Image (cartoon, rainbow, N blue to C red):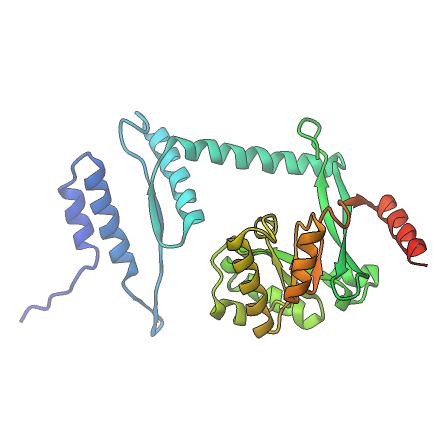
Length: 299
């Protein structure tokens, strides 16, 4: 009696055997590969799932040599990784431009560190309840020669952790998982506050907000600019503030430029605000003078 076994990759092999040199055929082969990879694998008695990011280049449009085709497929693969997990993309010329730009920026950042091109600026943050300065946001500015403008550190500086707020953009926060999420949670338990910056520009859900170790939401300036006249901005801002209140999160408004915006936000119960109406980002020596002048004026 003969025993038979099923080869999960047989469909992939058959697709390659019937390969036609066109995009539709490449797509069929890729989808078969991803289907095969998606099947659970038994590792030491545990069922494990894996995913793949695949880049595809086509001869002769994307290259007429093996090296060029592999290079372009590799570029498309990294673009697929950046877009979303378990995805595939066909190579496009603009992907090479983006990859070159990332490579150039990475090199220039390393050079900027060596040549001390980074400057620290501070932008004041006020309480809308008392109008008092409640903190300053530290901003790293890169003075490019052509283009112009966490526990160990806390321990070394002696700053109380509860006075430190780390801001993470919404898009980065929503992609945080595993080590990154554990790090944010660890910092929060250490006493450092975590703020979600640029809120409203990503795809946060209520379920995600409840799970993330955040205390503050910073409303993106794009929703502040039209206040108080723009109906859509009024509705969105009102909803964000009400939602944050229901979740026990403080709200900070970014990009406040007019007194009317400030008064409207205050009427909604927004706790804090920052923007050019209050102060532009200032170098350390200037922010010191600004704070002294402000305290003198109050007196």
